[in-house]
Length: 259
Image 1 (cartoon, rainbow, N blue to C red):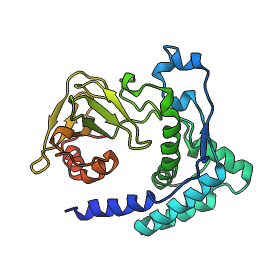
Image 2: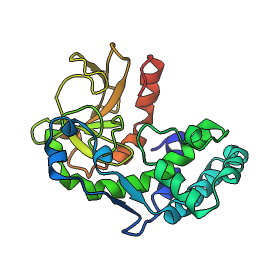
Image 3: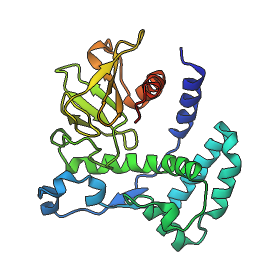
Image 4: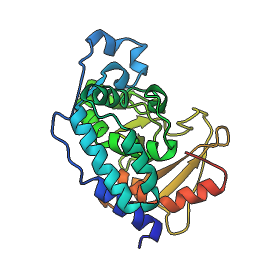
């Protein structure tokens, strides 16, 4: 049975997952083959090698849908959402620039757009608007890279930090999972994906034995992990596994660790 917090999160993300996109909502610039195979570029996420091209009209349509869901589920954010919506660009050219910059790694939209807006609410709105586009983008570009050969701690598609991990039921291999673009990739069995420290430890919680929380005393990061060998053959969706295991986040944070 889900706690009130977990149920609230489940309801919120269920509504967000109902947002649909047309097939051409986001495209990408095809890189040269030599770019994909050079040693330097092989260590870069695909979003830097294959820049996304987003449909600005679709982007702002989704943004308004996301804002409506946030306003319904988190009414305490309503006033700040209204301030943000009033400051968003209206002209087509400005909307296209805004939407394009939203998908450029390392760009702070508040700075680049010279916007004085509540940063936490703006980031919350923007991240949930970007997500369905990045998921579609990932579905299109992952065929350009062998994800079993990536073996880096950040996402091979968008460059984000992993939010969850999995121990495979067949051979115990470890896979990291990106909660933004929903991509899964191979990683070394032991060690911290955040600082690459070779030493890491884990704890489990009573009643949740199929999960482990790996933590690092070097960078104080942690990552929740599902041991698929203990999952009893049930169908696994790592996005929802992350939501279901919020109590483990609370335990890790209480111990001084962070994502």
